[in-house]
Structures are given as C-alpha cells and as structure tokens.
Image (cartoon, rainbow, N blue to C red; front, side, top):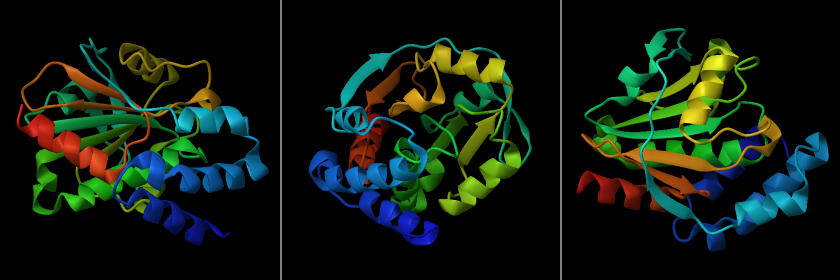
Length: 216
C-alpha cells in the first residue's frame, strides 16, 4: 500500500460515522499491522488492546507552565495565550513519524474541523509534538499539509524540556514516544476545567463533545 493510498485509507476510515469501536476496529488493526511490519513500533496485541479500550472521560483542572513554543509557520507562541481563548479549545499530543495512533488522531481532528463548516472559526485545535528533537517547524508544516489541516489548527514544537513540562502538566507524560497513547483534551469557551478523554474519537464523537461543551 503506497503512502498516498494508505493516508487516504486512514482518513476515510476516520470519517466513518457511528461507534468508533465497531467502525474503526478493522481499520486500526490493518493500519497497525502494516506499520509494525516496517517499524516494529509497538507489540501488536498490546497496541490493539489499548486501541479497543473503552473511552474514559473525566473532568480535570490543570495548571500549565509558562512556555513559549513554535508553530508550523515558525512563529513563537505563548502557550497559555493560545489556550486562554474565548473559543472551544482541543489539544492532543502527536509526533510526525508515528505510524499507529497519531494518524488516526490527526485525521479525526481534520475531519471534525472540516465537518464544522462555517463554525470552524469557533474552535482552536492545538497538536503538540512529543518528539521536538525531530519535529521542527518545517516538518510540522509538511505534516499539516499532508492532513489538509485548516487555519486555526496550530502544531507546536519547542525545547524538549518545555514539551515535557506541558505533557506533565496535562498528566500525559510517558516513558518514551513508543508508548504514546490516545488522549484528547477539550475546554469550553470561558471555562477553566478540561474534559480529558482517553481513547480514539471519531468525527461523530468529536461533534457530540463540541455540541455538549458549546451548550455548557
């Protein structure tokens, strides 16, 4: 399966409606198997068990560090100012060479952003790399183009120390990038608390969260 077809395959799987576990189980299984044949990134059975784990949703409060990161256009951004918005904010953690979880997370956010149509300006999407030593602004820019990310979706990198401090603040730190797990964080306009979701989210899931938080 070549790169273009494989990406289109994953994006198509991600845009399917309905339950993520009935709609995506085969999709993720095929993708993970294909990826690990080439990279050995993660034990297949352990990875699939994590992928198919039911979503866990909780309400959390986080105190974020004062850090300045750099986006895909090479512009320096104060993270707290980016997240302190009167719009709905969604945050996830990715890395561009990931071949399992991150393509699903990124395709899902792109599909959600596109599905919002004229309401896309009501949200800010922030994807923070967990591999800052590799993922420089140029690589993040190429990644954003690969997934056809719209304006309003920031991809951020920075020093290893600053990235780790952000991950730790979100209780998303992990021993290494190969043990990366699916986390999405959402915050309603004007609210302090975050919705933390462990598990892969379909476009349908994200739309439901968007509707719920915009009414809160």
